[in-house]
Image 1 (cartoon, one colour):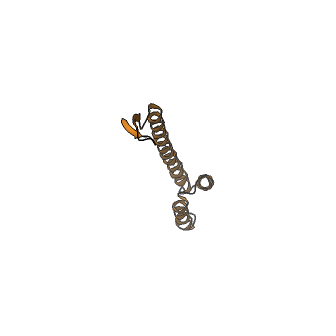
Image 2 (image 1 turned 180 degrees about the vertical axis):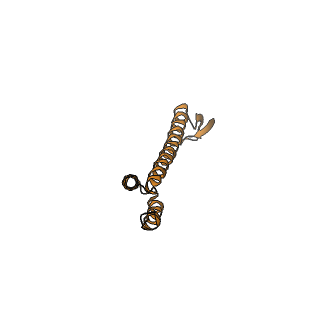
Image 3 (image 1 turned 90 degrees about the vertical axis):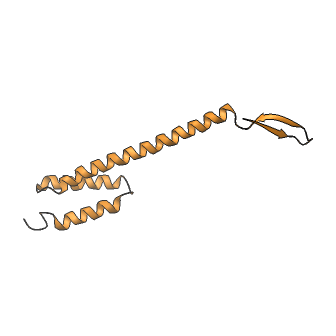
Length: 104
């Protein structure tokens, strides 16, 4: 793109507003931002998959598996703060209404 620049002496000269280097920098920044967003979404998805598997263990009637599930949940929750309230609500519900809470 060509633009005309006016100097202090009133003369006009042609120049470019965005050079090739600037275009490459913009493209590079765009690629990096896109990669970061995808990477974060992938990590979050994998975290939820692990959390679901840990919850499946906590809901079992096998005490050893349930204990392992609670330990896994503890480790997963300490690795992120994003969804702590959701995990805590499910864990409290499981603790209060699970088969071991009913005395089965």
